[in-house]
Length: 377
Image (cartoon, rainbow, N blue to C red; front, side):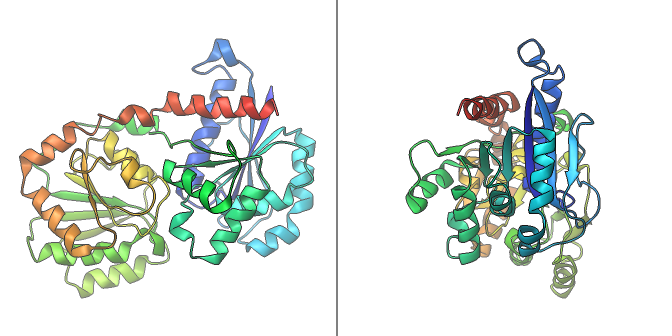
């Protein structure tokens, strides 16, 4: 049985990195216990999820009961505190459990785990859940990624664009960096319904944090309302910007059009009844929400930011890519799509054309192949 550790900075916080970690860990744990590949891989994987800190006390996502879960430091901690205070317990846990392969998932885990685990004589994989180029001018983010890559035997990124950037910027050796897409969660596919061509409801979901562009969303909504009042834009999520965005919506007189829905742990049920998905982020890795929208046959309108949307949306076929941060242009594209039912239906029908690229089985097999490769090192 292969003993594998998945490390994240804080598993008590909701985010794309944490969700992807749970998806992969759960899939491997179920498979190791007799899942989809029982004859091939029965008893194959013992999975450990290690949270270096724990701001909110409990894991934010559901883990398979066969997974071993361990929190190193309680409470909210800074990177420096983790690097200075978590090493002894982290290494002790890995040694006691006999962990043979470590995945550091997301940038903070790549940096902290890389430093803390230097003495552990096991293969290590850094999984960058963001985008190198979108934060290249941020010295801290650039440094964290540089060290995450340095202390790992392989680096996994979310897009071909990010893979090329790692080779160009960090001068990685051939084969050190590879792209593995996120997959569309099974529960999303199970809840996907027929497209509602007569809906006037837009949908956005994400953290209310600076990189997610909720401020740009308000700008787009204000510009769209000058063209039409016949829309409702439902926005799911929470975060430090929530109250500020709520105030801006009120100040702009958008209360009847932009509805803040708060946080939900059943996002897979929230796509039905909408006519399109809108992404206004400043930066992304590979946005899970766009994959989930695609599974629900929702045309997507997104800023064509550095990484992610252009590898999911085929411009003009199943969605629209808008020059980054051009809120007036995005409002116009949304308006044109709202007023053209036939075009929306056509885009909806094309959402499944490239869905195989993001299928669970295909991507899980890529992770399994990487595990086997690392065990052979």
